Image 1: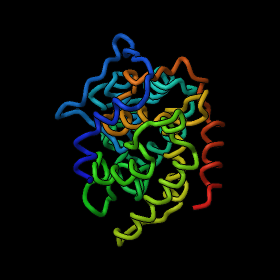
Image 2 (image 1 turned 90 degrees about the horizontal axis):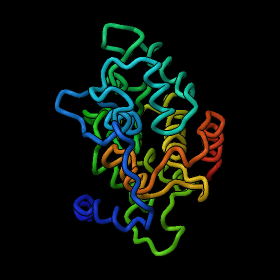
Image 3 (image 1 turned 45 degrees about the vertical axis):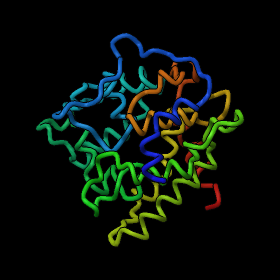
Length: 255
């Protein structure tokens, strides 16, 4: 069943609904990373680099690049991610030789910005906490219902409640198999926050939820889902207040 899912990701994408394709803006076409490009545990940042909203190399990124990138790619207020950038600086994660810049792979340092129980990465204990792990993602996709047939309008979306339950289940899985699982303050706060961030990034204002087809391309290809109808300009500007509101909703879901 797992192999069938992985082999047919593209087929499920075709069944996502009838959203009209929306080509990427000129100059921001999708280009997967090359052999020597740097990428992070965060699919949102990686997608930005793959579309040229950050340097495609994923290297020597400064705060102005992050600010302009998140605004242009996802219609966030430009300063929303300043605290995350400052955390990377404060944790001394950078390997660029310049404290005011970082490479995307620098964010994989365990239990700083990265933590156990990722939705799409394996835990540090198992050797690679940076790269997309299809088997880990399969468990998340199953719980989100990403590869179920689309029979109704509701079937096209992931609600906050479903996302919260999938996040909690993934953390429970990690605790069961990882003898060094670290339930640090960063993990406890960061896990709901990462779910809130992907929901916010892919939020459909009209539905009050995130489109499944957008989530698939975002995680599985680290591609902004223009071809599935995504357009940042058609959604409300994304604010830190909205993100914190979603975190509160996620934490309030009984799991």
